[in-house]
Image 1 (cartoon, rainbow, N blue to C red):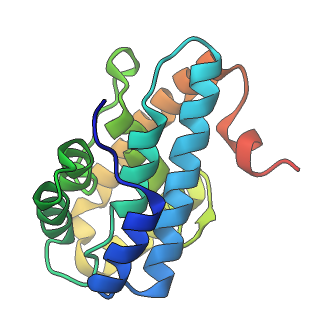
Image 2: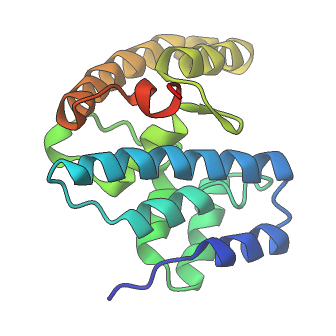
Length: 175
């Protein structure tokens, strides 16, 4: 069986790498969202590795205080033998794959990251408005690409919802 990082090991890494509390909350929320989507898809015949999704979600921003935190985080995880989690952490900032037929644990973690603001599920439009508002300050020339990615992700989320038989919002916003 493949070695997977545990919640306890992630908590140790947060302490070692001085991950801020608000980032830890974000990691927990991303892991939760990605894991719930994976669980629901598995209930409908898919076979996602839920331990990989949870571990990579929990660890994805462990090095957020570092420059190029995705690379640093991936190096930390590789050094501990968590290569699959490292692969996900390494691309989480820049992965824009929108193919339902090849949907993977990596995609689910990245989707979770794109649906969460801080430590709360926000949904697609609210999260992307947050991203666009941040981009207006530092990267106004990239807003068109963010909008394009939002629409591609909207299509993919629709396909996921069809496969799950319910909306993603209903997993997190309904009581």
